[in-house]
Image 1 (tube, rainbow, N blue to C red):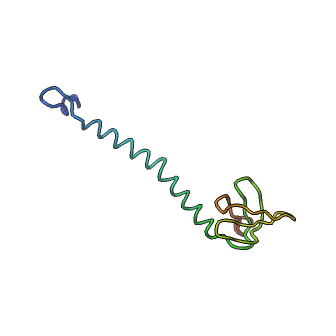
Image 2: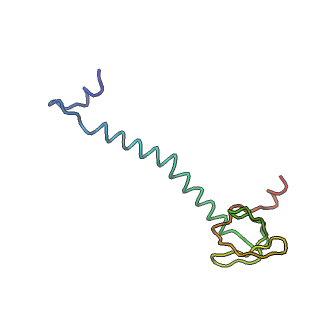
Image 3: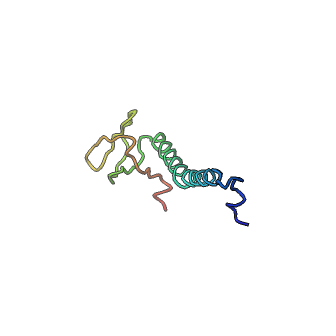
Amino acid sequence: MNLLAIIASPEGQTSLLPMVIMWTAIIAIFYFLLIRPQKKAQQRHQEMVAGLKKGDEVMTDGGILGQVIHLKEDRVTLKTGETRIEVARAKIARVFTAETQQQ
C-alpha cells in the first residue's frame, strides 16, 4: 500500500502528519548533531577557565604560551619569557598540566 494513501483523508486531501514528522526529525537531528555537542564543549571550557590557578601553564586562542601569575574575575596575567601580558579569561584555550606534559 502507498503510505500517502493510508495517511490521506477521505476527501483526497493529505494530512499534515507527514510534514510534522519530517520537521520533528529535522529539529531532533540539528539538536543532537549541532546544538548539544556545542553546549557540552562550552561547558567544558567554562569549567577549565574556572579552575585556573597560579602557576598553570596555558595557551591562549592566539597561540601565546605562558604561566599564570595573577588572576582577576575576568582577566588573567601571564608571564611569557620576560614579558607579562593580561588576557581575558575567555581567551584561554588550553591548560597544560603535569600529566599532559609527560605524554
